[in-house]
Image (cartoon, rainbow, N blue to C red; front, side, top):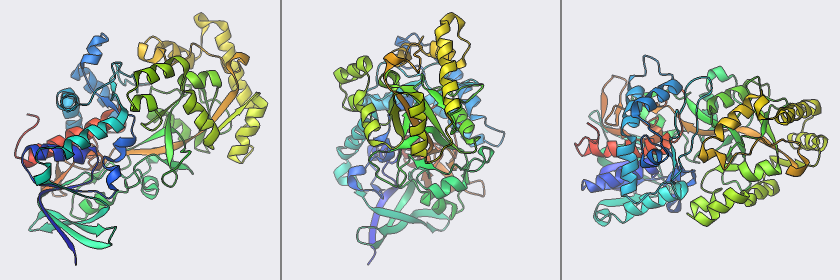
Length: 541
């Protein structure tokens, strides 16, 4: 016998977008049913694993640092990276909505609900050949994405209306949207514990099921064509249930799905030393003082690859190679000062909100993390000499493609530049390191022109890095009320979408690329907008 549920609103997906929508719907005294495919302990989705950075404009943290940011400037930066075309009406409208409202409707809302932010703003995606973030805008949740998730989950579960109006079911796979008279009235699927069919009916349905970055078949099928063939190895940095099933369900009801090739992979993925899913990868924050080399050990150029300027450019350059993976070469001194991994799991001091622990990592480096990866990740090698390093690089790659002459030339030329003194630097990486060190948020985590083959800097290290699948920038097309748009150009009655499944708004509000920190923020904003729309209210006038 099929299981049966009834509610005012059904939310498919218990990530940040779904949780945010549920909180607001409870505020409006709506009955809410959240259907999640994962287990109860994983309520919150991929946000729980995230670094917790969020893009905001003109915040108290920025103003205290003397940054006079404006939505007008931020939107110009956004459009520079997005490269919208004339058909991107809804994506561009959502982008403007986010930029002009992210601080009032996301930052302040989160603060009012108990989420705190680190006092120093990070400066990422500064732009390389076109403008990126003109100012630092990447606000770190104090406690990482783990804290963000915990705060919102507790806000939901402890809501005054939770006992009477909230039901959450886990390990339920939604497969089909129920349509009646041209209106979506709920969903059907399988309870994967009992293998029983279930049906959930509601006046309104919100799809908040994430992207499709965890489905390697779909990632390859929708690979951005100008990058050529997909890499042989793509690591999985997405949620295990980010499979695209709900995109199909919406498309089957003639909803518009768009821009699925506008994905957002990362350039520096390594194998997780303790994988939880097939091909599980971690996204490194590549050390700025490391040399980034292609699969043969040749330094990328003439513009060297360096983090924090243009992630998409790094991916593009790696994907131009015959073998689409890369190496970074550094030494232990650089690793201790600069090495980091993006995610809550790898940032213990921030995750646990330990100021003492955080200051210790700044002063002495995150040695525990470095040595964990050296001991347990297959993509790291150390050596005393360049010759030994190259031998070990080839050994883990299972080839002889890393050429000693390439690696030696890259190191010697770079170190020779440093020996000349900073007044004579003629290397773009060194110039950008000098630029980065002028901002206090980067100075403490960036070495002061550190040579690679420096006997005083410890052993040499090489890190093999793969393209890592992460975010789907395209998705279900929505209007500014989060209603799903049909192929007839009209909203589908009863159906809404929020978060990554909606391309974080409009089916692709980031366009071709992102200024970072807009994923979590996009989930919060679209979740709130969807709830207000269902309640017949306007969050943003």
